[in-house]
Length: 136
Image (cartoon, rainbow, N blue to C red; front, side):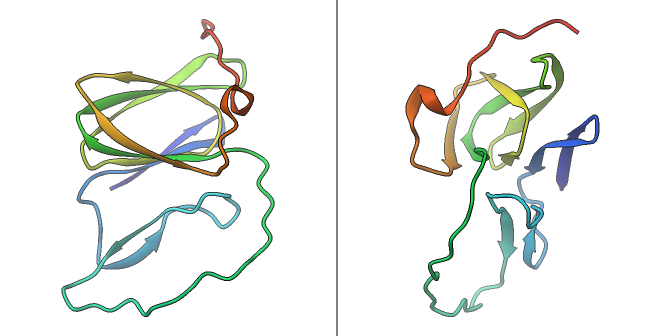
């Protein structure tokens, strides 16, 4: 199952729930995103031909990130441009989320292991602005 987090017509995130894969390959992000997310489901014996990726110049203006929940549960809070919490979602083992825009914060609901994937290089504190949430 694919869930889109949309607040005031702005796309904040795409959540791919565990075990929601259908046969074949499906991209769940629009071509305009700098981070592309697809899921694949192939039967035993399926071959993906060997290949290399060509050098292609791309322009990345903002960081988008993907979290893969390996174990445990994570609460994701979504914040608008005024830093007001507008939505939340719970992710569990096997779920994947692409954070596309807006602000976000996390609370581990249980012990958690997750993988983060985003454009690099990571430039530390220059890469993000931390904030205290505001009330609606």
